[in-house]
Length: 250
Ligand code: 13P
Image (cartoon, rainbow, N blue to C red; front, side):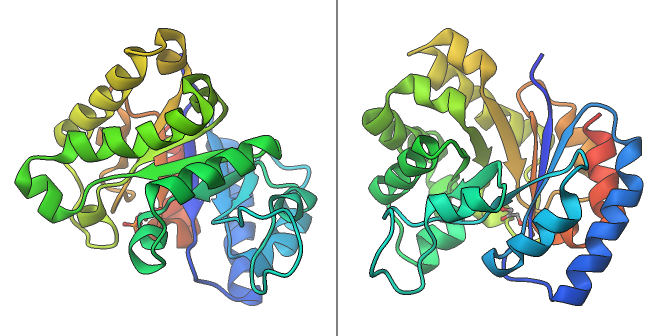
């Protein structure tokens, strides 16, 4: 049985005050979450505050991005070692917002996956098709290509060191969730793609769903065989909503 993981991707939201309140709320309710792992991914500048507030709790945390460089003259970038320095377990790589707004391509995302893994961080590899790609019927090709980039660079076994998040771009921040059946179909396809190369890695790797997952629709999505948790945007900014999703994960 794969453990479920619910990770909040706070994106570029929050302030010192709001984060304190949000973390207090999550900490207060975390005792009701039975078996799922719960993670939050704040903006870089709040990692210290998150570390201070969550150390000694069952909640873990991660970053939303990382540099491919180790250190040096890369103004504005953040290295894997720095993310480690703040006690992060996870780091998101290849979020669709990074791909579409900041031009990150499959090769760069694979490199980020590799750098994160080498630093002992668990990369959360985001993949997913745009609406146009879905309508063209190339969803499977797109997710297969996005995963293949990591396998080519790192080998299939590397996928067992990370987490995959299937996030259909058309469902992100739109309130349009993939139906449980639509999501399950792609998750199953992803697992089969990996199984074709290594069945044990495929059985082990957690595949999260992301895209307008909320307190009302989480249980149905999380009940699907190949959905091992969620990567939550908007609904992770409200403690009660986020906790409802975490409880639905078990
Ligand atoms: P929303 O839950 O706001 O749709 O965002 C999903 C997401 O992009 C998580 O990484």
